[in-house]
Image (cartoon, rainbow over the protein chains, first blue to last red):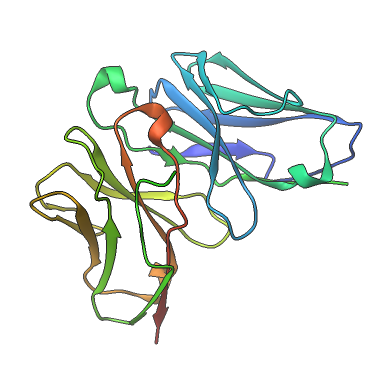
Amino acid sequence: DTEVTQTPKHLVMGMTNKKSLKCEQHMGHRAMYWYKQKAKKPPELMFVYSYEKLSINESVPSRFSPECPNSSLLNLHLHALQPEDSALYLCASSHHPWEGPTYEQYFGPGTRLTVT
Amino acid sequence: DAKTTQPTSMDCAEGRAANLPCNHSTISGNEYVYWYRQIHSQGPQYIIHGLKNNETNEMASLIITEDRKSSTLILPHATLRDTAVYYCIVRVSMDDMRFGAGTRLTVKP
């Protein structure tokens, strides 16, 4: 099973709302990633979790707060977002580099977020 | 700063081989070349990766030049469902997984 699931598929939220995006994988991967993708642009790396610890934060604004409660789950908590944060948010997972030299990533279908 | 250079777009006739080039002239000895594709409105999909030898799987073949400065992804018999943006990425660590602009491949009937 190489599936990464993301919920919800679509989300519309106001600038004062608090919402969360969820990502789940059952491949035993210990590296998990959040990406943001604007229309007609490539995905941009936001966060990387390594063995449930945040290892990379690509200078993402604090209104995005990631969380990795266990090895299968990854959340992205959203608060006080701006309209320009509207995008497709992608989650991915892979084996950890400590487990071998190659680690292809498996992506979920994404959550399409609209901030109004 | 992008580590790879790819053509912006390419067309291919259905049933023919699609050959997608990627230039990675600054690649270091321990960096692998990965290829992904993204079909419209879906998450990226892993295709294949390699270090220095040519590789083949059920989806595609990857040809890496001897000096490793460039590679070509080959889809042997392109179908309409192969229309997508194809990304070539070189990486050695977890934070290397950054996408360039990719090549938009259009397979035409």
